Image (cartoon, rainbow, N blue to C red; front, side, top):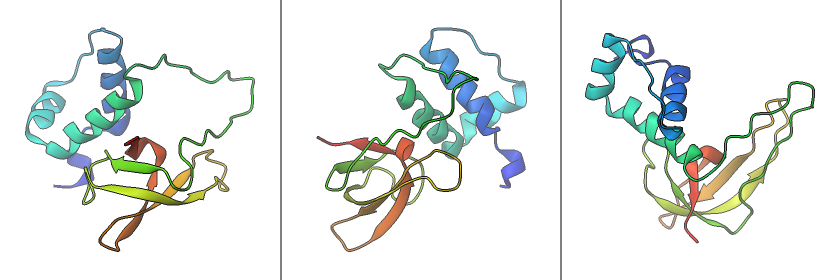
Length: 129
């Protein structure tokens, strides 16, 4: 399956936001069918949905400069909630990588008990404490 076959991430984000607000969101027939059959796209919707769960949506003001928000610190125990090889694994944040590319997004290096490690975006992690 190619990336062109998947539902676009922005559409999945909009679907998750609408569902969190109790609003209807219309998927195209192709998108709806694909979402039923694709575990990866359903996983992306789940990740987005977790971001809205229990949190009011605060969109940035267009006139203010963006700010990066650090969600975790070194030593925090986390679970990987994003789709991929490490989904639902637990580990420890060993490095916080500050945004330097102008995207205002922190990244977190996580070590696992088996000696493996990987780097994740904050939205791919959930605190286990």
